[in-house]
Image 1 (tube, rainbow, N blue to C red):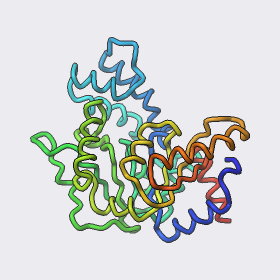
Image 2: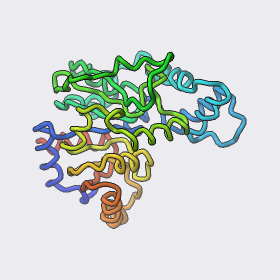
Image 3: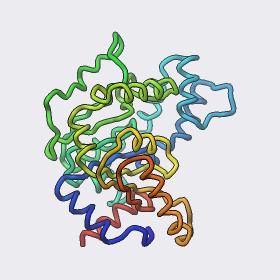
Length: 289
């Protein structure tokens, strides 16, 4: 962390956490040591479906080939995730500042993620909280996918029973996964056409009334930029991101430009903590002392 993140940032963030006005949004970087990177998964999926091309580092492109040539890449990717997650316990995570051990101890009613894994739910269970899980309804139900289980109705999440909402689906339900190039296009079309169907009312309210805390997205992550453009949240937001430069001097010069760049994508003022999720959790604990 550099001096671009101030004590005032901690004061404001901690007040909002204490009053339930923060909604975490977790990306792939939060789970990279559990399931590997998207590049790792793409390479394994390419091997599993015998991709005949040399380009095998883009998961959506590899999945698109698998969908056309082999059908149902979601099943193959879900199996890769199952292998990684079988018998994994949050209690065995190597550090007390692991994001899934530490942040899930904070009373937060709604968690958002673009990850397919169930690490947030496991982290909440580790902290003795049973969560309800749902997904974005980006494709209509059919004979192969009954998505009625995700109908939240008038139910409201609470800190006693929080919601873990998977924006791009979950590996336990392959039909819900946004994975191929075509899936992403259909997802974006649905987002533009009707956010009310894609996102339940309780999620939309959190986007409009709370500060978002992005963890696990790099500064050039297209998922991160798309979420900012789609949501246009009016509140102060925060992003925990790995530093793109080793030099504090370069980072200090880059940060004002980058924060202005983010303001072009959304209405929100976004403060950036340069560091890993673990470093953020450790610094957050220190700020509480």
